[in-house]
Amino acid sequence: MKKKLIGGIAAAAALALAMTGCAGGGGGGDDELITVGFAQTGSESGWRSANTESMKAAFSEENGFELVFNAADNKIEAQIAAVRSFINQGVDAIVIAPIVEDGWDDVLTEAKEAGIPVILEDRTVTASDDLYAAWVGLDFRNEGVMAGQWAAETFGDTPTNLVVLEGTTGSAPANDRAEGFAEAIEGTAITTLDSQTGNFTRADGKTVMEGFLQKYGDTIDLVYAHNDDMALGAIDAIEAAGLVPGTDIQIVSIDAVKDGMLALIDGKINFIVECNPLLGDLAAGLVKDVLAGKDVEKKIYVEDQSFTPEQAAEVIDERLY
Ligand code: AHR
Image (cartoon, rainbow, N blue to C red; front, side):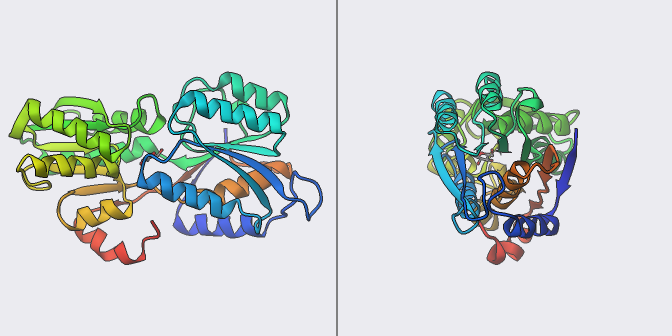
């Protein structure tokens, strides 16, 4: 299997290449638009909004595409139905950000039998990689490791009570970020008091954190939120309970979206691991290459960074999301 890691500069070069590529790759002549069905998860987070914007900008008419967009409101059946509808419409290619990892075998087989290539972006699936042409996204497990390493270095041997706000149950980022973090804090004095899903949303993050505070009160030392939106919800809950986020209860989260970075600079979040949502140009480049019959990398990882409050303050003005 081919595998590739793309950093900031390489990603920019890839996108320049993608945007100058032939617009008529699979759709016929040079003037013909490539019809792409994109099955997005929904609109659960700031990260998701930035990802949708990036995809819509990349799959524009100007770049040679006609985009058929569907957001499934994080309902798995609705997302699979959207992919089936793209197959029935006879689109040239399908791009999916799969809500969960399991359950994709049937519909991916149907796309393959219809001769429609599938590109996955952002999240991964457990189905055989013969069923899709390529995937582009982030190393979620490593994001969890980076968050866990910060926790291990910060709390070391000090007994520390942790609560976890998990992402959507069954999703690749929730599974992998949990696994990576657990590995990194193994052998430390950090004890997980509780771990529940907040569905990657600010509202659910707040509700779950309220429940944790009712149950464990100020014995909680640390929150690990699988994304910034849930961390922001936890901040609301902590402040409503009369505690100081970032001081009484420390917070580590993942994404590095604008609101998360501002909370980090304000000292309400203590550390953020990035998850870059700007995958549109790489996905569009892959679609063109696959339709042109080119040999593409099967897995393309975009590199992530991490931020302390000081580092966030240095870069906040130049961030694109
Ligand atoms: O799959 C990426 C995750 O999905 C982001 O971390 C989260 O914010 C989003 O909803």
